[in-house]
Image (cartoon, protein in one colour):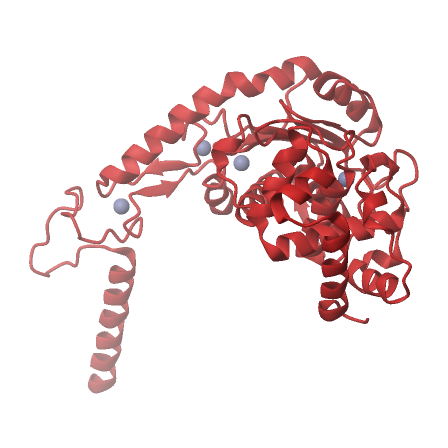
Length: 396
Ligand SMILES: [Zn+2]
Ligand SMILES: [Zn+2]
Ligand SMILES: [Zn+2]
Ligand SMILES: [Zn+2]
């Protein structure tokens, strides 16, 4: 009994030690440790905050706080008196100058953004859910959506879509080899659930009313759309539409700002937007200039397979004709060819394609722009492009 009792006592003591270690407590009887209030010296770890110098604000969930790092401003927590709209508090158990500075900067940024974004609330006549990141302001008025079989609430969606938008921006700059200074202003994106709110907002913020979506191109740029099931069968299609349309905003806003879609630059504008759809999903099914018919489809959106077939059967739309179209004049096979021709030019060199787009925005014709950048006529480029497609695109 005595042995058993003493073993139990040892185990209990060991458990207490583990609990004490896990809680970061000073051990009774241990060599007098420094009082807990004293901050650990530089390089010493703080168990309380894992040495990050900060802790999540108790007014929100930990997950919510973590997401706040992805934005400059979030209206959902902007008015929190505890964290000043940052999602974080300084760790009371240690001192971390970098964390302190970062938190102060974020607080100041939240206050700076607040009046800029309040404009949307005033014009719509009620408080809106919105965020700001480096390159976008996003108004998000959808309560919940099913994303990969999980129902996601409004606050998380606001952050998720802020990230989606920034990803397009980063990819756009990488692919076209563009510096971010070529974009003078944040692009504004509005996503509504109610068609009448979309109608009102598109008139207010994009200068034209439509129940489905309106883009304001050039400078400034904005896109207001209705994300309701009437127009998008699922969240993926909504996401794809935003990726597609945001590429239009960026292309038109990049210096020198100009919309090329009504200056026979439809091939470059739509080609690039479909290229981004293909990059993320391998499917191109966004036809953003179709006002009414939402079920437009070309070969199930499998553009690579479709294009290879068109060329193999000698039914590909001629490049010269394609280079003369405005965006709203493009036929479905021309959308597919525009994607593929842009795909070919990006494959050659994103920087050169960017140089072509820059010329188009400066009102140079497609023919002259291609000749200047590639030292080749459209006919020569066309045969190189078709050979490349036959060589590299899948048959099915
Ligand atoms: Zn700490
Ligand atoms: Zn938030
Ligand atoms: Zn808070
Ligand atoms: Zn489009």
